[in-house]
Image 1 (tube, rainbow, N blue to C red):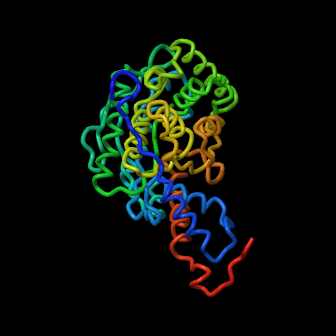
Image 2 (cartoon, rainbow, N blue to C red):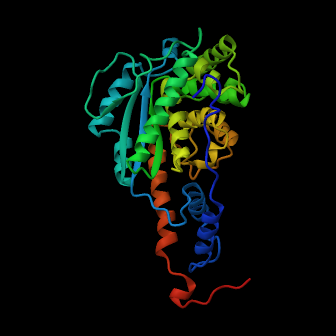
Image 3 (cartoon, rainbow, N blue to C red):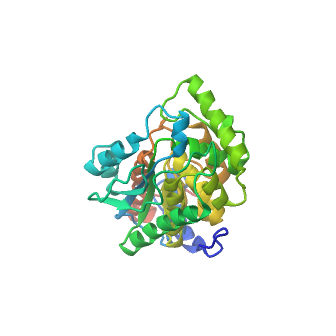
Length: 352
């Protein structure tokens, strides 16, 4: 990637012939055309992404990228930064919500350190892709240098390429980083042009007074740094996070290899905004799992032109919503392949 926006990124087109083949298959099944709604739309979308009208997803991975944020010193979170490292250890032990839901979906969980405060050193099962020991405080200056922003994106892109070479068929995005809803709100405000108060939520569960303070901190960060909304690297460097940059790169890297990416909630939605700025059209390769309680998430999804599959009032992160959506993807594929056609079942087909 050059120091400018990613002019070297070329994404494939969606495969319209694969989409048509899938649509024809679905319409031949023993049901009224389109009667399974979003499941049918999902099957067609996946065919276009992969180029395979009978694509399957046995090899799934939830990628959880972790990093810390200097803005936590402003008191924007109900939890201290030390929780980031503690939760990473919990992921690696298999004790977190994402571990339970990924197992249900038949997915691996890959955890990567993009910049946890205090280098944890070599830990079995933890990928080290450290860009720094947490970002700088965005209320006083840029989160990172432009060089670090590029490094974060490229590290995520490389993880996607390595996984693709190992047979990955479906990726999901997850994250961990105390303070990252503040960064995500700042990114979303910068890209969409919406005021901070409309894209800032309670994150880890802060009260009304703390929420007002969080909005003020984000407003100060935007005023101090003046991120350029048409330069995604500038937005990432000025008000983003190392793990957010890594996720943006992962999204791009998967799209380059025709691997569908299931977005989780607000943080990964902000990462998708960065990815779309770096690689226009990348949103074609994304599946939005759910609508988060965080108010900025809807703004991010609308900017990307994505409609979430469900709304369960989730606000945990970690990739939990994306893991649930992986099961819906399996359902869409199972319907496509497992149902009988009208001819096979000797059922009279409806004629309009």
